Length: 253
Ligand code: PGA
Image (cartoon, rainbow, N blue to C red):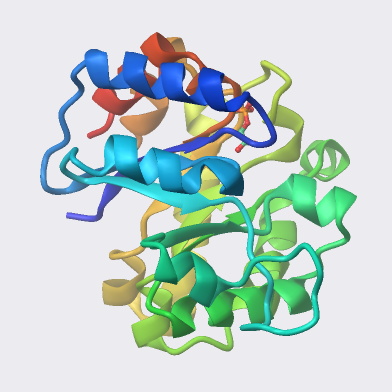
Protein backbone atom coordinates (compact mmCIF):
# COMPACT_ATOMS: atom_id res chain seq x y z
CA UNK A 1 0.00 0.00 0.00
CA UNK A 2 1.15 3.52 -0.75
CA UNK A 3 2.36 5.64 2.18
CA UNK A 4 -0.46 7.65 3.77
CA UNK A 5 0.89 10.99 4.96
CA UNK A 6 -0.31 13.83 7.16
CA UNK A 7 2.07 16.72 6.49
CA UNK A 8 1.97 19.90 8.55
CA UNK A 9 3.08 23.10 6.85
CA UNK A 10 3.58 25.67 9.58
CA UNK A 11 4.66 28.29 7.00
CA UNK A 12 6.15 31.44 8.66
CA UNK A 13 4.31 31.10 11.95
CA UNK A 14 4.98 30.71 15.70
CA UNK A 15 7.67 31.89 18.09
CA UNK A 16 10.03 29.25 19.47
CA UNK A 17 8.02 29.02 22.69
CA UNK A 18 4.79 28.61 20.74
CA UNK A 19 6.38 25.95 18.53
CA UNK A 20 7.56 24.04 21.58
CA UNK A 21 4.18 24.21 23.24
CA UNK A 22 2.39 23.04 20.06
CA UNK A 23 4.70 20.02 19.82
CA UNK A 24 4.18 19.22 23.52
CA UNK A 25 0.41 19.32 23.03
CA UNK A 26 0.66 17.08 19.97
CA UNK A 27 2.79 14.54 21.79
CA UNK A 28 0.33 14.60 24.69
CA UNK A 29 -2.48 13.75 22.26
CA UNK A 30 -0.70 10.42 21.85
CA UNK A 31 -1.37 9.79 18.17
CA UNK A 32 -0.07 6.57 16.73
CA UNK A 33 1.03 5.77 13.21
CA UNK A 34 1.02 2.37 11.57
CA UNK A 35 3.76 1.17 9.25
CA UNK A 36 2.24 2.64 6.08
CA UNK A 37 1.54 6.03 7.70
CA UNK A 38 3.77 9.05 8.36
CA UNK A 39 3.34 12.43 10.01
CA UNK A 40 5.67 15.07 8.61
CA UNK A 41 6.24 18.47 10.22
CA UNK A 42 7.49 21.20 7.89
CA UNK A 43 8.49 23.77 10.47
CA UNK A 44 10.34 27.06 9.90
CA UNK A 45 13.99 26.12 9.22
CA UNK A 46 15.22 27.75 12.42
CA UNK A 47 13.13 25.34 14.54
CA UNK A 48 14.17 22.16 12.75
CA UNK A 49 16.79 21.04 15.32
CA UNK A 50 14.30 21.65 18.15
CA UNK A 51 11.56 19.75 16.30
CA UNK A 52 13.90 16.82 15.61
CA UNK A 53 14.85 16.72 19.27
CA UNK A 54 11.22 16.79 20.41
CA UNK A 55 9.56 14.56 17.82
CA UNK A 56 12.16 12.08 16.62
CA UNK A 57 11.35 9.57 19.37
CA UNK A 58 7.96 8.96 17.73
CA UNK A 59 7.69 6.18 15.18
CA UNK A 60 7.10 7.36 11.58
CA UNK A 61 7.33 11.05 12.48
CA UNK A 62 9.62 13.23 10.36
CA UNK A 63 10.68 16.85 10.38
CA UNK A 64 10.76 18.59 7.00
CA UNK A 65 11.93 21.83 5.42
CA UNK A 66 9.57 24.15 3.54
CA UNK A 67 11.99 24.96 0.73
CA UNK A 68 15.66 24.66 -0.23
CA UNK A 69 18.09 26.20 -2.69
CA UNK A 70 18.83 24.34 -5.93
CA UNK A 71 22.62 24.53 -5.55
CA UNK A 72 24.63 22.51 -3.05
CA UNK A 73 26.67 25.41 -1.64
CA UNK A 74 28.21 28.74 -2.53
CA UNK A 75 27.66 32.47 -2.41
CA UNK A 76 23.87 32.51 -1.97
CA UNK A 77 23.37 34.65 1.12
CA UNK A 78 20.44 33.63 3.27
CA UNK A 79 19.78 30.33 1.50
CA UNK A 80 19.91 26.73 2.77
CA UNK A 81 20.78 23.76 0.54
CA UNK A 82 19.40 20.23 0.38
CA UNK A 83 22.75 18.70 1.55
CA UNK A 84 22.69 21.02 4.59
CA UNK A 85 19.22 19.84 5.52
CA UNK A 86 20.23 16.23 4.97
CA UNK A 87 23.27 16.73 7.22
CA UNK A 88 21.01 17.54 10.19
CA UNK A 89 18.65 14.64 9.54
CA UNK A 90 15.94 16.24 7.39
CA UNK A 91 14.61 13.70 4.88
CA UNK A 92 11.69 15.61 3.34
CA UNK A 93 11.53 19.03 1.67
CA UNK A 94 8.42 20.80 0.37
CA UNK A 95 9.03 22.22 -3.11
CA UNK A 96 6.99 24.54 -5.28
CA UNK A 97 4.33 25.54 -2.79
CA UNK A 98 2.01 28.00 -4.55
CA UNK A 99 3.13 30.74 -2.14
CA UNK A 100 6.71 30.24 -3.30
CA UNK A 101 5.65 30.10 -6.95
CA UNK A 102 3.70 33.35 -6.52
CA UNK A 103 5.76 35.45 -4.07
CA UNK A 104 9.22 34.16 -4.99
CA UNK A 105 8.66 33.60 -8.71
CA UNK A 106 9.55 29.90 -8.62
CA UNK A 107 9.21 28.49 -12.12
CA UNK A 108 8.78 24.89 -13.25
CA UNK A 109 12.37 24.97 -14.56
CA UNK A 110 13.71 26.07 -11.18
CA UNK A 111 11.60 23.41 -9.46
CA UNK A 112 13.05 20.77 -11.76
CA UNK A 113 16.50 21.76 -10.46
CA UNK A 114 15.37 21.81 -6.82
CA UNK A 115 13.73 18.39 -7.18
CA UNK A 116 16.96 16.90 -8.50
CA UNK A 117 18.94 18.56 -5.71
CA UNK A 118 16.69 16.99 -3.06
CA UNK A 119 16.74 13.54 -4.69
CA UNK A 120 20.54 13.73 -5.09
CA UNK A 121 20.97 13.68 -1.30
CA UNK A 122 18.49 10.83 -0.88
CA UNK A 123 15.70 13.01 0.51
CA UNK A 124 12.05 13.15 -0.52
CA UNK A 125 10.62 16.16 -2.33
CA UNK A 126 7.00 16.97 -1.47
CA UNK A 127 6.21 18.55 -4.80
CA UNK A 128 3.24 20.94 -4.85
CA UNK A 129 1.01 21.59 -7.83
CA UNK A 130 -2.44 23.09 -8.26
CA UNK A 131 -4.43 25.62 -10.21
CA UNK A 132 -5.67 29.17 -9.47
CA UNK A 133 -9.39 29.97 -9.31
CA UNK A 134 -9.71 31.27 -12.88
CA UNK A 135 -8.34 28.01 -14.26
CA UNK A 136 -10.78 25.97 -12.15
CA UNK A 137 -13.65 28.19 -13.29
CA UNK A 138 -12.62 27.66 -16.91
CA UNK A 139 -12.54 23.90 -16.26
CA UNK A 140 -8.95 23.57 -17.52
CA UNK A 141 -7.36 22.44 -14.24
CA UNK A 142 -6.21 19.06 -15.57
CA UNK A 143 -4.17 20.61 -18.36
CA UNK A 144 -2.73 23.21 -16.00
CA UNK A 145 -1.54 20.61 -13.47
CA UNK A 146 -0.36 18.31 -16.25
CA UNK A 147 2.00 21.05 -17.48
CA UNK A 148 3.33 21.70 -13.96
CA UNK A 149 4.14 18.00 -13.52
CA UNK A 150 5.61 17.50 -16.98
CA UNK A 151 7.76 20.62 -16.89
CA UNK A 152 9.22 19.99 -13.46
CA UNK A 153 9.28 16.21 -13.03
CA UNK A 154 9.32 14.35 -16.33
CA UNK A 155 13.11 14.52 -16.61
CA UNK A 156 13.26 12.11 -13.64
CA UNK A 157 13.81 8.39 -14.03
CA UNK A 158 11.26 5.84 -12.78
CA UNK A 159 13.56 5.13 -9.81
CA UNK A 160 13.53 8.81 -8.93
CA UNK A 161 9.83 9.51 -9.44
CA UNK A 162 8.72 6.85 -6.94
CA UNK A 163 10.61 8.80 -4.28
CA UNK A 164 8.60 11.99 -4.94
CA UNK A 165 5.46 12.80 -2.94
CA UNK A 166 2.93 14.95 -4.80
CA UNK A 167 0.76 17.51 -3.02
CA UNK A 168 -2.19 18.70 -5.10
CA UNK A 169 -3.24 22.04 -3.68
CA UNK A 170 -5.82 24.11 -5.57
CA UNK A 171 -4.79 27.71 -4.87
CA UNK A 172 -8.41 28.77 -4.37
CA UNK A 173 -8.67 26.37 -1.43
CA UNK A 174 -5.47 27.39 0.40
CA UNK A 175 -6.13 29.36 3.57
CA UNK A 176 -9.59 30.30 2.30
CA UNK A 177 -11.72 27.85 4.24
CA UNK A 178 -13.00 26.69 0.83
CA UNK A 179 -12.15 23.01 0.42
CA UNK A 180 -12.39 21.07 -2.80
CA UNK A 181 -15.18 18.52 -2.53
CA UNK A 182 -13.99 14.98 -2.03
CA UNK A 183 -15.23 14.26 -5.55
CA UNK A 184 -13.19 17.14 -7.04
CA UNK A 185 -10.13 15.93 -5.10
CA UNK A 186 -10.59 12.31 -6.23
CA UNK A 187 -11.11 13.35 -9.87
CA UNK A 188 -7.90 15.32 -10.15
CA UNK A 189 -5.86 12.91 -8.01
CA UNK A 190 -6.89 10.08 -10.32
CA UNK A 191 -5.96 12.29 -13.26
CA UNK A 192 -2.52 13.05 -11.76
CA UNK A 193 -1.94 9.33 -11.23
CA UNK A 194 -2.90 8.70 -14.86
CA UNK A 195 -0.35 11.28 -16.00
CA UNK A 196 2.39 9.34 -14.17
CA UNK A 197 1.02 6.02 -15.41
CA UNK A 198 1.21 7.20 -19.02
CA UNK A 199 4.85 8.22 -18.62
CA UNK A 200 6.21 5.64 -16.13
CA UNK A 201 3.68 2.79 -16.16
CA UNK A 202 0.83 1.91 -13.80
CA UNK A 203 3.05 0.05 -11.32
CA UNK A 204 5.14 3.14 -10.69
CA UNK A 205 2.11 5.47 -10.62
CA UNK A 206 0.45 3.26 -8.02
CA UNK A 207 3.40 3.75 -5.67
CA UNK A 208 3.28 7.57 -5.69
CA UNK A 209 1.58 9.18 -2.70
CA UNK A 210 -0.64 12.09 -3.74
CA UNK A 211 -1.67 14.39 -0.88
CA UNK A 212 -4.52 16.87 -0.98
CA UNK A 213 -3.96 20.38 0.42
CA UNK A 214 -6.29 23.34 0.87
CA UNK A 215 -8.30 23.97 4.06
CA UNK A 216 -8.01 20.40 5.34
CA UNK A 217 -9.31 20.26 8.90
CA UNK A 218 -10.43 17.69 11.44
CA UNK A 219 -14.03 17.95 10.22
CA UNK A 220 -13.32 17.16 6.54
CA UNK A 221 -10.15 15.01 6.69
CA UNK A 222 -11.97 11.69 6.99
CA UNK A 223 -14.06 12.22 3.91
CA UNK A 224 -11.23 13.57 1.76
CA UNK A 225 -8.68 10.93 2.85
CA UNK A 226 -11.16 8.12 2.24
CA UNK A 227 -11.01 8.76 -1.52
CA UNK A 228 -9.04 6.00 -3.27
CA UNK A 229 -6.44 8.27 -4.89
CA UNK A 230 -6.01 10.63 -1.92
CA UNK A 231 -3.11 9.51 0.25
CA UNK A 232 -3.36 12.07 3.04
CA UNK A 233 -2.97 15.82 3.22
CA UNK A 234 -0.69 18.83 3.34
CA UNK A 235 -2.16 21.01 6.05
CA UNK A 236 -1.51 24.68 6.79
CA UNK A 237 -3.81 26.50 9.23
CA UNK A 238 -5.18 23.42 11.00
CA UNK A 239 -1.65 22.11 11.64
CA UNK A 240 -1.12 24.99 14.09
CA UNK A 241 -3.82 23.61 16.40
CA UNK A 242 -2.78 20.43 18.20
CA UNK A 243 -6.23 18.88 18.56
CA UNK A 244 -6.99 19.55 14.86
CA UNK A 245 -3.77 18.06 13.54
CA UNK A 246 -3.94 15.06 15.87
CA UNK A 247 -7.44 14.33 14.50
CA UNK A 248 -6.15 14.75 10.94
CA UNK A 249 -3.40 12.18 11.62
CA UNK A 250 -6.05 9.81 12.96
CA UNK A 251 -8.07 10.25 9.73
CA UNK A 252 -5.29 8.66 7.63
CA UNK A 253 -6.18 5.39 5.91
P1 PGA B 1 -4.31 25.56 4.44
O1 PGA B 1 -2.88 25.55 3.71
O2 PGA B 1 -4.48 24.20 5.06
O3 PGA B 1 -4.19 26.65 5.49
O4 PGA B 1 -5.33 25.85 3.43
C1 PGA B 1 -2.45 24.43 3.00
C2 PGA B 1 -1.08 24.69 2.42
O5 PGA B 1 -0.84 25.82 1.99
O6 PGA B 1 -0.22 23.79 2.37
